[in-house]
Length: 267
Image 1 (cartoon, rainbow, N blue to C red):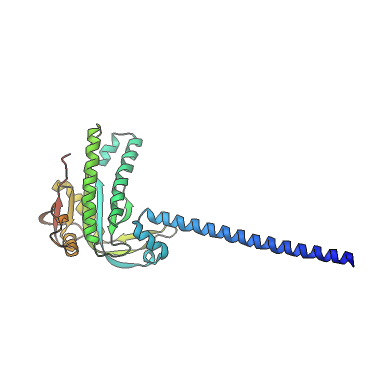
Image 2 (cartoon, rainbow, N blue to C red; image 1 turned 30 degrees about the vertical axis):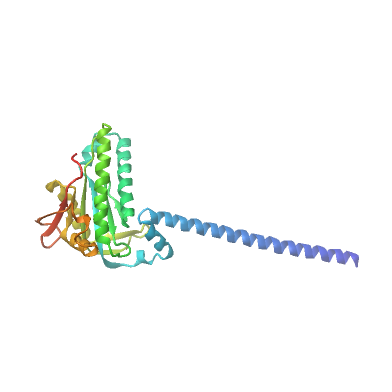
């Protein structure tokens, strides 16, 4: 009987050990799964933070449906470009070219997020930003205009610092337009949140128009009128703007009225 009692205790100990081992294994597995999910969430938030302002990242982290819904929406579009960068790059080392672009993009990106914009994409020596994506706001046009003006100040200050240090000054130009665009994911394995339409193309054409008009910024009257409706026509954001005669813009059916803004310093 004693041997049976000892054998029974052994069996109980083995059973208890197995239960504890299984419990620990399940706990470890759940802990690993939790860490993996947490890392995935943080990685997704990091990816979103590359393009969207912090308030938008917080919303998208809870629900990514706005990125998946294909729709038409009114959006303000901003194009930024370094004038004559190809010639600038041809005369410099690759390291200097990349360093210059990193400094420039960092300044522009900071202003996009500071004004609740979305960094749509880098375009080599420029970038495209949108305001009102993925969520339409009550101050999208005025935010875009304020952002462009802050960028002008930052770019002119940076160019002045470069000139004082013996480097070549940098001239930056800006184009602004607003109107309906198509939003939605495109691509198969590499998805991109796309902003597409004649509004985007027109904003790019307005940025190119700065060369002919010798100014820093060209904004469509559509954007300026919408911005005035948002913040009032007496707002200081409109003081640097000068009305110009209507311009024919490729891909737009009729000539559009525009506004221009000069640079804050002479380069």
